[in-house]
Amino acid sequence: MNTTMNPASSQHWTLHGELEVNAGALNLVQNAQREVLVWVSNFVQGQFADPDFALALSIFVRSSRYTVAQILVSSEQRILATPHPLLDLQQRLSSLVHLRQV
Image (tube, rainbow, N blue to C red; front, top):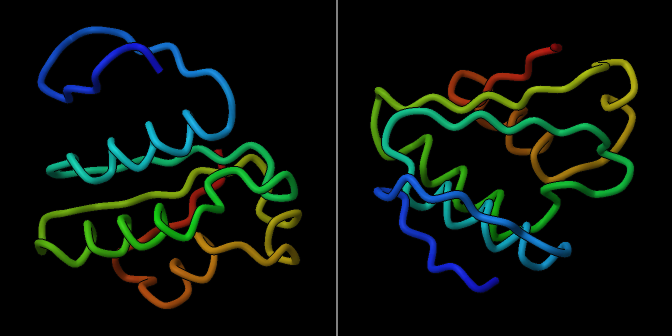
């Protein structure tokens, strides 16, 4: 990734490859202040399955009573049978991490 990630800036980032996407997502969660929305199109392919991302999201939602995290999915039925770190986190912190079908 050629661009320094600065959440306060209005620049756009182009991420190439799984490693850059994981690093970008981790950076966004670590710098979030109020709300994080994670859209996962396919749990089977392991999107957002990085344990560091799940840990950062866990730390974020427990950092303040005003923080909100939502995992947005297209089909709840498909994902409930698929093991995934974000689903484990949602089950452990169900009052802080919400699963929503979109």
